[in-house]
Length: 311
Image (cartoon, rainbow, N blue to C red):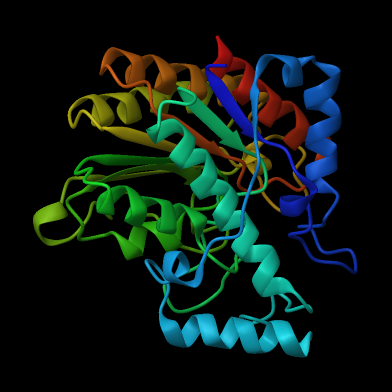
């Protein structure tokens, strides 16, 4: 199978109760659509695992890991200022998300599949030393660090979630190994308030980072106008591995954002990135579900991504 997909209740357990937007029903919403479209018969199912403490420590600080472990055991409070609740077992649930991303990444690197998708993943707001925006551990950041350890020197991170991927951007702002491109709702109107077009990297990495803020209400047309900048940026650096954070909260009707994309934009982005990876001779694309709080939207957008990766 050319495409691997992580489908498991193990990652479905990552979520928060009491009506929280990031509920544990998101995995099931995707799985129903994924199955109804017959996609499960066309992919390699990848079993997730828990990330080890050493793997988590490739990105996160020991002090932060201990903090999450303590809150996980206590089973209460918040891991940040109020967006990300702690619950009993949150450490293990978050470690399983990171492990799922790493398992998919490893399958691609080993040639077991050419591309892969993980629905409950892409937790791009967690910083090295703190949680943020529903994100406990940053699986994107851990994956990038592990790819660097594997010897890769040009790793592309592309983010089309409505929210700016601040946890990834600032962690690698001065890192010349990470080519960054992020299309998101303008931070003047949406959390986390970052990702201005002037933010292009620091030091030797200046110019390697591309941030494209979109006005509230922007739809497929505005996305299509901006997207060629992303592709030009990536082609200029010939990445050896491409990570796509394909958050579905940029679709019209999401309860906490203001963009108006359809799943067509997500499908087109995945298709273009797969074609670029193929043209570079390696084919390596890892897509991560990211945000999305309208269940129908995320089911359609993520299924469109898988379909494009297959085609």
